[in-house]
Amino acid sequence: MKNINRSTVIIAISTLAIGLILGWLIFGGTDKTSENEHIHNASEAKETIWTCSMHPQIRKNEPGDCPICGMDLIPLESETNEVDPMAVSMSPTAMQLAQVQTMKVGKGNTNKALRLTGKVQADERLLYTQSSHIPGRVEQLTINFTGDFVKEGQIIAYIYSPDLVTAQEELFEAKKIKETQPALFTAAKEKLKNWKLTDKQIDQILASDKTIEQFPILANVSGYVTQKRVNLGDYIKQGEALYEIADLSKVWVLFDVYESDMSWIKKGDAVSYTIQSLPGKTFNGAISYIDPVIDPKTRVAKARIETANKELLLKPEMFASGTIESKTNTSNTSLTVPKTAVMWTGKRSVVYVMQTSAQGVGFLMREVTLGPELGESYVIESGLQSGEEIAINGTFSIDAAAQLAGKPSMMNPEGGVAMTGHNHGGNQNTTMTNMPVNSKKTAISDEAKKSLVPLFDSYFKMKNALVNDDFEKAKAAGNAINSSLSKVDMNLFKGDAHTLWMQQSSALKQSTQHLEHLSDIKALRASFIEVSRSMIAIAESFVPISTTVYVQHCPMADSNKGADWLSNKEEILNPYFGQAMLSCGENTKTIK
Image (cartoon, rainbow, N blue to C red; front, side, top):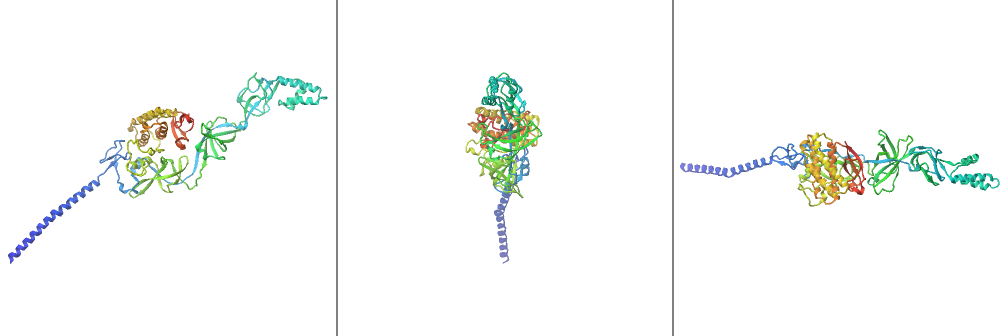
């Protein structure tokens, strides 16, 4: 019995041991494999991706330098912590390097400061023509040059008139028989009065009983001689002009008002203006008249200011620059944002709204409706609310990051895979226009400035070719801009200048890379708007040209939105319209 029990125990123990071994082999191996896979997956999940803050398309598995700009690569933050799935996240380091600046949207001044240019002109109502009332030969001129002052009643010339001599002799004969023929005597006097002789002059002739051969011509008005019409010895007819005289005690200041600005100006608006040749003096006046007709050649109307000129400081043809504060039709509760915050593509206007949370910062594209343009800002009709924070600088960098991340962007409002490289097909309406470019003034070395000179030489050639309506030369110069840009050594730009140059050169590259595929001058001029915007930013930031460069503006360009360009000459030669409206525009800024 004992032997049977012992055998049973041994069998039971053996069975249990075999079961444990089999369980360990089956389940223990599976747990270890699962654990190893978990550890491997966790390791893969923790693998860091390195990117460049200025070129987010660069993705590497290890730290190093950006192959494009040479900057240190930074860890790519996970996008799982974004405030909004459609927003593009940016680290504080990336925002600083991209020079992103933000502001809270609020109510602003909705008045528009409009700049005007014009000239001083004589008051047309005070212009006179001094003529001779008798025919004859000019024997003497007491006023011999233009600009001389004439006083009313002053003798300005002596005329020998055979007809007047004959009329005086008839008067003497009529005097002898005036007792019997009073009507004849009266008729002889009236004949002299027809030649504008006064009763006093006629009485003097009768008293002297001698004919006057050289008869004096008296000035009818006081003023300055603006034109001398006769010379000594000339024969003149009755009523022929001797001088043009202007009374300059009152003058007009005539300002040019472009067609696109007509809605901003009305009669009675106050204008503060300065005269180029009178530095330090500021004048004020009100618009008394606006031309009802626009000049078909210059596309401007004249706005008139009438002003007293007792000290004769204001002289005709002096250049004047004025500023007018024009009130919009919007209420004082309207929201305003800087121009640099707004990006356009076709008919759409967008801004980037900042969103923050404990996980970080994100920027979400928002379409807005723009109201009136107020110089350096816009009124926002809809799309934003007071207190929301938006990006006002660095918007181009934010949009580029959104494109590369497949998030909604200006060129791809629905999001998706970003387009890279050349894309010459598809809808051309996705071309970016009016892209703000940072133009912060930054010091660079002389060598860096020298490297930019060929860039500007090609730009000015393109501008001049567009002025002359020469499509082929303009297109060749545009391609030369792209070529010159590729030869600029980015290592010459240090510190903040490097970051700024990377932004500006990227914007310029984007605006020039498709020029070679354009087929008409209209499309080339449209692209020149963006090229000019980038070139102006580069010129303002680095001032590479040793001579004065002028920023010029045409309010009619870009479908009356207005556009700027650079010129190395002060004279206005419009590249957006060429010979059709060659002188349309004004100088708005100088870069020295």
